[in-house]
Structures are given as structure tokens and as C-alpha cells.
Image (cartoon, rainbow, N blue to C red; front, side, top):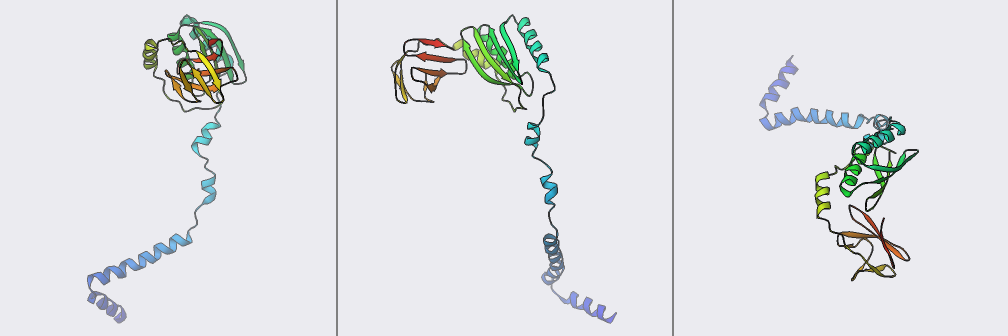
Length: 216
């Protein structure tokens, strides 16, 4: 008891700073010992796959036959003429006739059909629309602003493109030389072939040939 009384009296005789240090020091040593003696559970971390990887493994439950039927019903209700529609594995190919406004609405319908639907290829030639839709995996989608697209379409004016020359990696369209990915009248040059080029904007892809220009 005398020893304890001596220790207590000695502690009380210290100034406040030393008292605080004597209290904090054992806690700090304890914390260091816990940090270096506790091993992280690596196996637990590895066993939890990334959420995005898990989402990629999800599969669509709806049958392709049902999807095709729904697409045909949509087309009939909106007076769209489907020339052909076919499926291959998890892809659907559609050939359809409609005006530009209805083409845009139809494209939005397909893109928003479900969480797996994604436009794989798209070609527009006047009233004809060729489109391939894929359902391979779950997609994160950007919302299509339908009203904005239609407003832009109404402002769109037809341009008479003329391909005059192809020299190496440059082409002369009308009176302007272009390289791949350069833009002319809101149309981007996306491909150069031996005797033709491809121009593209958000509404259409145009094939220009040396002697004949065609919309795809």
C-alpha cells in the first residue's frame, strides 16, 4: 500500500504535460502492437469480385422470339414497315422503312428496350433503315435525348457531297481536303477506300464514290 501511495503522490507531483504523456504513451504502444500483429484477411478481399465484373456475368432471361414479337408489335402500332427481321444467337438484324423522325424513335425504342439491348451497327439510306441489335451483356447507357435529335433533324439540310480525288491518306470532297476523323459540314470522315470514302454524322452514314455518291 505504501508503494501505491508513493506512486500516486509522485504522479500528482508531475505537471500536466507529463501526466498527459504518461497516459497517452501506453495507449500509443498498444495501438502499434495491434497494427503490426493483426494481419489483413486477404482471402476475404479476393473472394469479393468487383461489382462491374459481376454485372458482366449476368444473362438476359427474355427469349429472342419474345423480343422479335415485341419489336414487330411496336412497328405495327407506329405504322413502320419491317422488310425483314432475323435473329442469330444474341443478335437481331432488322431492315425497316420509315421517315427520319420515325427512324429516330425506332432507334431509341431499340436502345432502351432493356438493360442488355445495344445498337451494334446502323445504316440509313433515305427511308430505309438497316440495324443490328445485340444482347450480349449488361450495358451502362447514355440517355438518348429524342426531342433534341428530332429538332436537329428538322434543322438539317441536305448537302450535295462530291468526292473529287483520293490521294494517299487525304481526300478532296467538294473543295476541301480531309484526313480521317476530320469533319466537313458536320460529317466526319471515318474511312478511306481505294475508290470511295465513308462520311458519318448522328443521323446517317454516306458512301461517296469517285463517280457516284450514295447514302448507305
